[in-house]
Length: 85
Image (cartoon, rainbow, N blue to C red; front, side, top):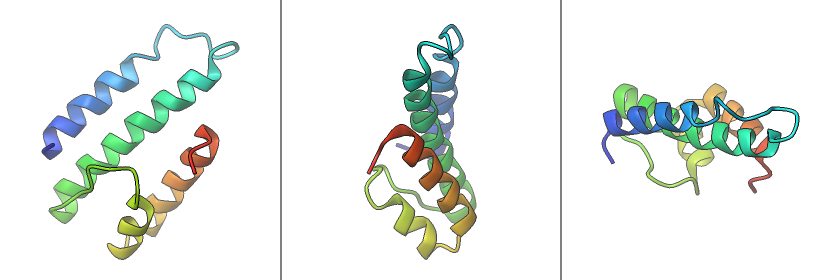
């Protein structure tokens, strides 16, 4: 998927949580945030680095290799919240 499509998808995913109750549906909201974050990161990487990964696996390592340790740390925190290994 190209960068602009990742941005569009991230926005659609993020908007999908608008009607959810954070007290009872917090797990769903965290999953949605994780999915949106992945697509925002892909968009950023494509725009700023000229490449991105279309898979979650190896993304933290990819970001480290591109000198994006701050972004990697944000991803790791979101993954931890979402319960993603």
